[in-house]
Length: 170
Image 1 (cartoon, helix red, strand yellow):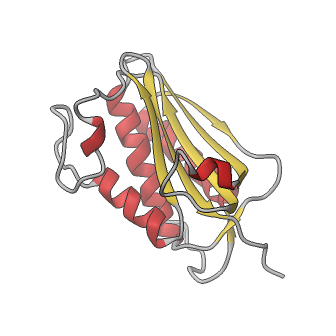
Image 2: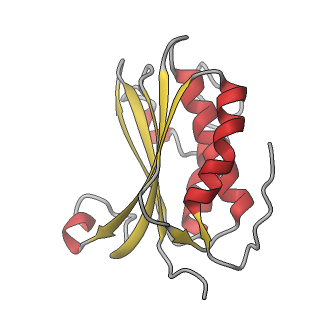
């Protein structure tokens, strides 16, 4: 893993982190990768190295799930979570959030495995460790956010990390 030092107590623009990680993603994973960044800066306060590890975990999982010529999309967006959203998303909170999504067009996750993917030491027959998604969820929670997954068997998955959006430093 390549570490890009950023002060862990200061807000940082996640788009800058994603841009710095693009080169290593492309060369390491040798996959058709698309980076779609929000047009404006998206500021969060969390441990940058942990967020970087979350993104690596999600991209590693996406790469493992896709066929040889598959693709991965990494996206950043700003979202405003409303009370209506909370009805279907019990881990969510109201307010402005940064959403970082990693999508693949791979095999998807089975209905049998889906309820267990964030459990520590759970792994499907393809994975070997079983702590990556657990770590991702815990980092999101520690930062005041959450993680969601949308998947369709045979068509791929999207993992979205939601982190509270903060004001840029002055």
